[in-house]
Image (tube, rainbow, N blue to C red; front, side, top):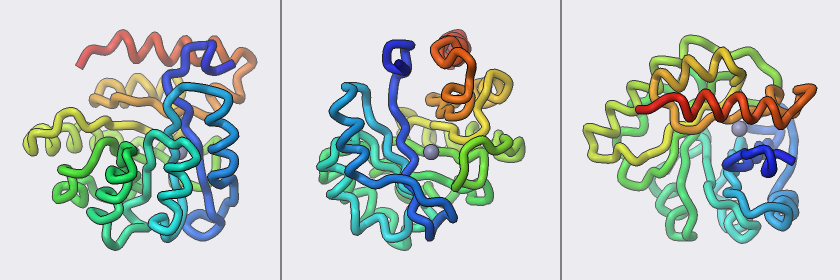
Length: 201
Ligand code: ZN
């Protein structure tokens, strides 16, 4: 349904009950989703020790593998590994984590997932304080010659908050409740897409 409604990617929230309190799904479900769609699968690993499972998610059919900065003591190595598996490498930043932490890994980075809620549960309220992080990331990567790195925003995205993050230069909007909790999910996707397409940056 979301594919038919025009969703560009499928974002998969993987939670381990350790890095975040909630427990969701692992790579067998990613494998099952892979069989249902040709859309890019954007796997957001909210898990400790993600290095142990990168091959599993790659083989399951992930296109983007996004790890949390806070869960990776050797982030450059982790991102290089994801790229060696032939996948796009992403880093998620919790709301309190500075954009500066990514300055020295921009050479192995394809996507930044700016968390606009504390990860772990759906349906949380958007944290306004993270908004400036988007334009700071854009400026930092432009200075590093990497203006192709995508900035995605995850948490509390609806028509109102989407406008704010798009204005800062966000490239990708992740929405859960706004779509899956809507009376008409297809219409919710069309509204978010129309907003994104109206912005040129
Ligand atoms: Zn997510």
